[in-house]
Length: 498
Ligand code: BES
Ligand code: MN
Ligand code: ZN
Image (cartoon, rainbow, N blue to C red; front, side, top):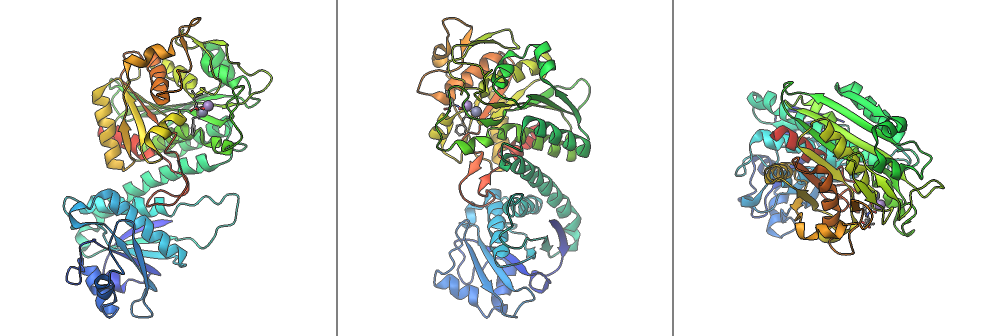
């Protein structure tokens, strides 16, 4: 899909459908933006009377479509709600455009024109709105149709129509930036939506190599033999039960000086999590193909970091394997020796993600990287605690945590900090090894994070548990049914924010 900026008048632009927006408190006189007023006039006051009769409320995510019946060059107008005037945020702009684009696509529009949705409301710059509009369009129109026929047509062009020629170049740059982030998010979505029989560790490594070649990143893929000689016993323990070879993928981006620190982005990549010998119940098992969402997010974020030429050094680390109960599978009761040298007693082979993270974190520490950011679909408990919209964030460093939450605020990907409660550390104590891989029934997201923190030690580290947020059961704003691509844009914003 192409997305471009032109100067002109939205009401005379030759496109199939147009997007205009209004706020919840606009009444007839407040048919707010100039574009809405003009569209309203051309449609004989239809918008005003719908506002009067409460047919249009202007609530967030509300879309009203009107057929223009020849009164405008475009066939359809989508009127998108932004909520109350004083409360319009960049998130609302993104979501409004996403909803508007989907509504127009449903009605067969192939080309879409949009006004500068959100501009003019308090605190939002034109460039921020343009960036958000591009994100909203590209994220909202995402579909995954590799294995089925598409339901309808596709939008192939979105044009942002602004009044003054003077701002076109600046807004075009903002639009390009938004599109890069949204395309990266869609790359992660594509990987997560792929079934487990295609998205194997080897396939993830191939994609990482493609991304590296395309975006100019260094890439290294460690094979099982490399992992054996390095001593990645925790990762290898998980990989034992599967015939698919594990891969440890490394992507390097050098945007900072040679003496600058190097951030590590670490993503759990279990391409299918059966639970292993501690096998999961059959219900909902198909969903466990998305247990590589953390790894996919890291690969995708690295692509955006390189394309936008951020000025930091960043390395993506993606430990990738299946978790299957084959004849060589690791067992509950086994003791694994991790890369750090710490021994781990396996209580449940289903608590496998933390084992991958342990070895990847030790690898990053050995390479002198800091801070360490890991993202993982780690615990069902996190989904129980925070639901499907908020990811859980844990950190041993308040500064890193504050910067990460700030980044999530900018991206609109919701996050909430959870306690890394020292009081619970004893729950991970083992009788026969340095640590065991599960706590007890309660506080499962916390005990998992505490386990991982033991391997980070005093290195600044943050863990985002995305088990609740990696998938959505419905379309809502920029989120579409299936993989969400969380937290690609937050990782990018974190690195950009410094
Ligand atoms: N991949 C799962 C976590 C998960 C659960 C992700 C639901 C998405 C949706 C993880 O490997 C796992 O199985 N965790 C266990 C931990 C338990 C054995 C301590 C869990 O959450 O049940
Ligand atoms: Mn598991
Ligand atoms: Zn898992």
